[in-house]
Image (cartoon, rainbow, N blue to C red; front, top):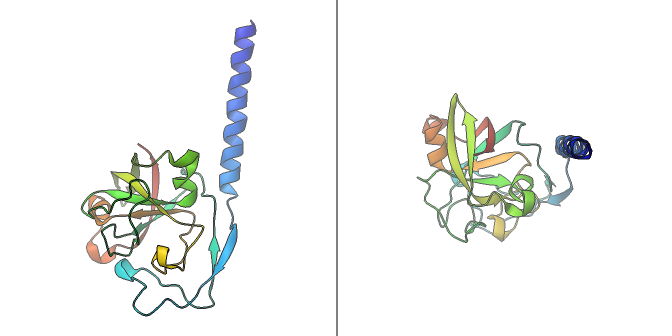
Amino acid sequence: MKMKNSLVLLNLLFVVLTCLEITEAQNCGPSGQIVGTQPPPGQCNQGNDSECCKPGKVYQTFTCSPHPAHPAILTLNGFERGEDGGGASECDGQFHDNNTPIVALSTGWFKFSNMKRCLKNIAITGNGRTVTAMVVDECDSTRGCDEEHAYQPPCHNNIVDASAAVWRALGVPEGQRGHMPVTWVDA
């Protein structure tokens, strides 16, 4: 009888903790802000329609991301040296071929459980298709408008920043890539 009661208590604790995690993620609001500065001439890479920080504009920062079950925004990123993605990927310190299905996740999703998603796959669904992609980097939601971030603003808290290979696999024509609602799960 004690074993059965212990299992019931453990299950109840799991449900309560899960509900708290979902509630916290749903209430994921801004954690701070950054005021944009003028990037040095020629230093902001606007590849893939990336935005440069605007002097005086206030950008929100986030330390959390919504629960992955909530819709995300798929954006286009270049992971090769010299592209709009900035420096080497955080998971392995390498640059990656854009013909490989890879992504960078907003800080809250990327830092989840001490970066446990690094070099793991996620399944992204959008445009009526699903593709599997490897997480290689963070789309930093806590900092930006500096050299390390290619003078681009902080990411929003619900971004899946994807290589061209992911967009191709989802069947999105080249001229229509940039921002698209998607869902994703750990694969």
